[in-house]
Length: 323
Image 1: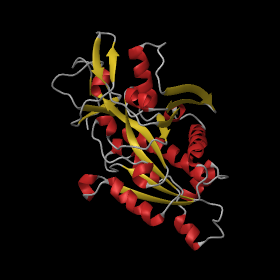
Image 2 (image 1 turned 90 degrees about the vertical axis):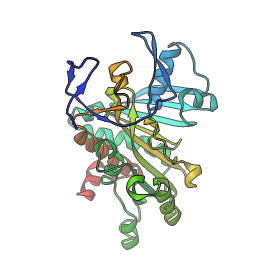
Image 3 (image 1 turned 90 degrees about the horizontal axis):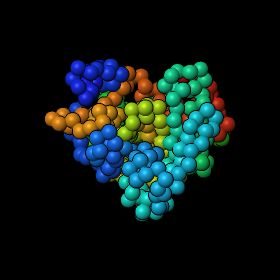
């Protein structure tokens, strides 16, 4: 993978990003390019970005029917809450009806002191509001763990406190813990099976009260990459941000409540350049230090969800169990 990005002009180099090419389809969300008065298709998995792009296109003062949004700061983390209330909002934003909570964890990417604890605790508070203290949960890490931009899901599983086996063998010692199990379904090209088929089989066998799925997302803005986490009860369709739709993970397909947790790790080059790029469409951009940054955000999410599933623990406790 090359460690640079070719911007609008070949002689302009931005060493912060990496390029790799992948065939993708154009999205359904259109946003204005005000510098040239043109329209471009922008794909994003983040509801907050879809809402912002819609507002810019329609006018900042225009209200979007069927959508409610607000922002707040809590515990040093900026949080955006978008609630898609009905089909009008779903059609406008290209997202299913449901709640979407986005946390901006910029201090984590700057490696500020205490940023891991702050991020994990913020994720824990928000995840707990979706999960409602389940007695058992199945966690699925979607994606290809051999490709860093797609490894967020599998790498997050390595930072989760898994307890189903411990509760089975030491029930008294772990009586206050949630029964947590994990599955890493891999990708269709290596398993020959849809990830949903494998996760559904595991859920039917284990019968958890909730399913939590982790997956890498696509963003429209570079500052979101590996600094943002989205939680939603609307489910998740892997690859939808890049036009590569797979079978959706949702309550209807799995038969139990689903919490989808994702972090954006890549974006389209056209969005970064501010225009379509003739001859090189389908180019994807990631930060050049993507391996390190995905591991950081996966650790924060894994710790945070562990705290939500096992109330009373601290970040230090989770780290100690996983050491």
